Structure formats: C-alpha cells, structure tokens
Length: 206
Image 1 (cartoon, rainbow, N blue to C red):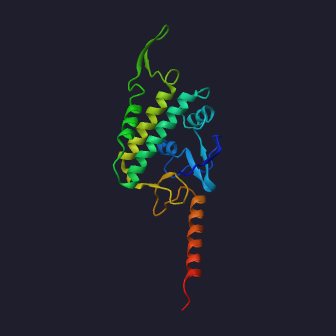
Image 2 (cartoon, helix red, strand yellow):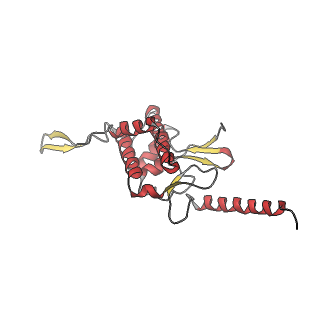
Image 3 (tube, rainbow, N blue to C red):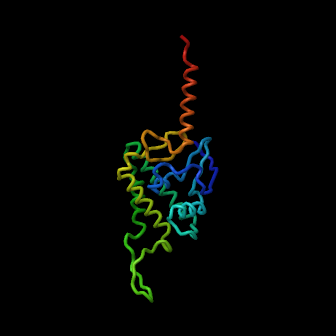
C-alpha cells in the first residue's frame, strides 16, 4: 500500500468545497481527508485543533470548543465509515455491515427530543443539552443523519467520485462534470492530452 505523506494539518482547505458540499455537510466531512498529487495528503481532522476549526466552521460546535484527541479520533473514524458507504453507492456494490452499524450508532448519539428544564425566574422550558455537554455526540449525529439523507434521497443519483487521479473526493455531478474542482478538471484534461500525444507519437507510420 502506498504511504501518503501528510503535508498539512491546518484547517485551511487546499481545494474549494466540492459541488454538493454546501447542501450536504456529510459530503464535506467525507472530503476532509484529501489526497494530493505527488503522494501528499492533508487531513482537516488530523489534530484536535483542526477538528475544532472544522466543527466551528460548519456550525457544529461553539467557538470556544476545545476537543481532545479521543473526540477527534471519533470524528475521523466516522468519516472513514461514511466514505465507505459513499464508495459503495458510487460503485454499486453492497455496503459493509460495519459502516452501516457505525452510522446508525452515530445517529443515536444525540437525544432526539428537547429535554425539560426549569428556570428559577421563568419556570419550565425545553431545550436540547447540546452543545455544552454533548458537542461531539451532536456533531456525529448531525453528520450521520445527513449522510443517510444523502444516500437515500434524490441527490444519491448524482453522487460520484472525482475523476482526476489521485483526488479522492466525492461530489454531486452537474451535467457531465465528474471533477470536484477546476484544478482537478485541468489536471484530468492535461493527462488525457498527454496520453493522446504519446499514443500518436507511438503509432506506426503508414
């Protein structure tokens, strides 16, 4: 197996969000580990600090959140299971039972109902316990729910993998576009042009 060198841990994206990521945070979540040309790799959830920033940017945690490594590892683990399910959908093959179990488990992490509280001045009220006590559980549940919606909803028909090697991102296809960014599209076209030139140069003369 080829080992990819990790070149960045900052939460600054190396590519713009893939098409569909704005509607589906689970798509951006799956794409937070990015394979780059030259065997390089960047993981936007690679450290607690970058995982903090990613959750804050996606409105899944308050600005003062300070995740521990165990929490960041939970996010990375769910991401791999979501990626497995996306690959199964795109490839048209059965999902791994472990991936389904992981997403279903994450769906149950946060309470579905707002809990009853009592304010000394205003009396009873209902509110979810997120985010003060269940930040990661809430994030996992939201991302798992969106992944389930993506895989079972009408957008699933447009789900595809970026067609530019070595990019590993997923996107929602628009027309015939199979690239997640202009950069990947340019690289794919350049690769095709290079292959055509080589084929032409290697063809026997008549």
